[in-house]
Image (cartoon, rainbow over all chains, first blue to last red; front, side):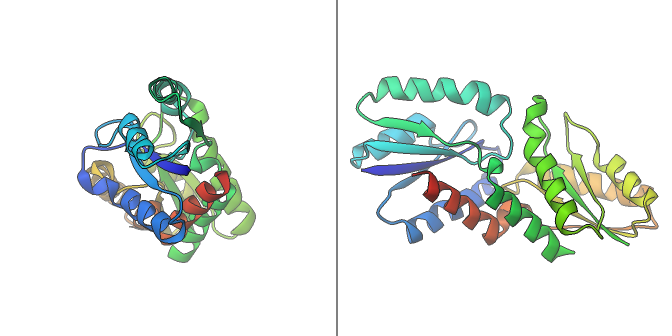
Length: 120
Length: 120
């Protein structure tokens, strides 16, 4: 079974995660056959490892991790590959893969431009 | 004249800003009558104040600032309003306003969900 993890940075302020909770809800409404979990790099739970464990316990065998970051900076270029490799070692029976950061997607950038245009 | 500032967090790794540069290019292609500048909270230039100054020098009288952040955490709830008020004091002839973070927009969230769905 395929599954998806929406992976964000995390922040001290609990309200920061509201759009992430909304993202997960949207996913569940539209793609109910594919389980989703949130995961955070720091300051928020669950960790990437906990999210993978949760999806594996639901029967996931192929997990795609989507970094919900704008840019590919140090976190995604340095910290994330190490985390991902650690998770893969701990869960050898599941196939983990990752996409580019969502900020690399033209559709996401266009939605931001359209939001700005509506606000003028 | 109206203008827009796309305001991001900033990061140490210069490559982090690539999606922001792409956003500004998209804006210029699609909304050429409305000047755009990027601005960053920390670690990258220009600052919000420098971006406002640049747009004012081009004749902007109404500037909308779009926080290109996912969540409304401490940076947007605490740091950003202070920065914005400081800029407004320094440039009393221009009207500054700010939108919510782009992560509050359903169109942006939907684009992220669609990106994830295509990656499965």
